[in-house]
Amino acid sequence: MARITIEDSLKKVSDRFALVVLSAQRARDLSLGAPALVAKNNDKYAVIALREIANSELDIDALIEAVIKRNQRKQILQVEDQYEVEDEEAESTYRQGMDSLANSPRKKNITSVYIDADDDKEED
Image 1 (tube, rainbow, N blue to C red):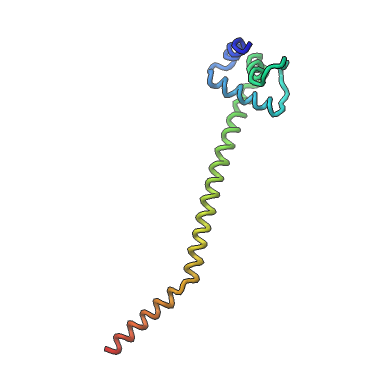
Image 2: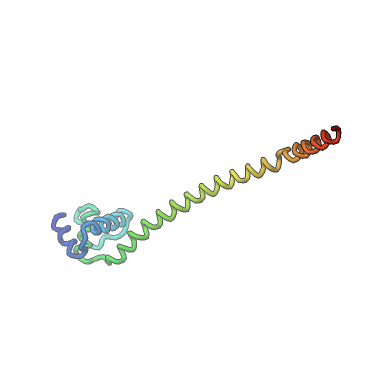
């Protein structure tokens, strides 16, 4: 049954790889509760998805858009999460550095060195 379904589906979708991606997306949709557009007949979601594609029950362009959106959303979230982590780390490092500069006694030490140096010259 599945071989015939694949051959029939290839008439609607010319590329085998695209057929795999599209049928996998539709099978995911079915597993999440989307209504089947053909009779189930105790078939698995992948077979039902292939039969829907073969019978032209689905809008292929809409399915392609769903696949693209699903993949883009994950990539965008991964990039945003990466920047948030980097921004938080950079911000905390910056704040620690600024706090340590604000609380450091450097200025007093530098002035005392200059005063000591001036005092040494006057004594000579």
